[in-house]
Image 1: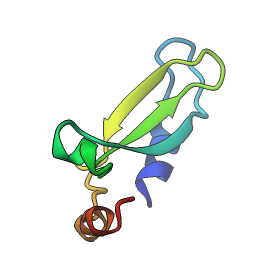
Image 2: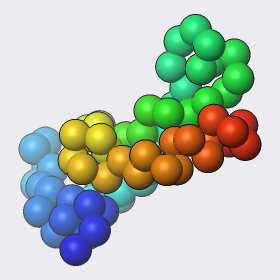
Image 3: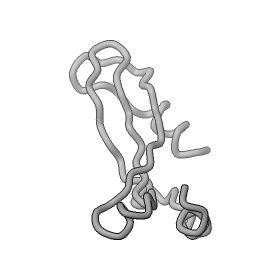
Length: 79
């Protein structure tokens, strides 16, 4: 089961109780050199309630969804 599927099946909005969140994976640049070369090495899952808009962010690396080979490719290709 993927991280997205787990979040979609287990997440409940703490504000309004909705059980069907919107899950998106986003990549961000850090500060310094990574920002200069637009190296998006920080990845997060954003889980949002479609009813009230409440949103939580989860670090993809902590959830075990960080592909180290992809981060090297991001650096080399500038994605």
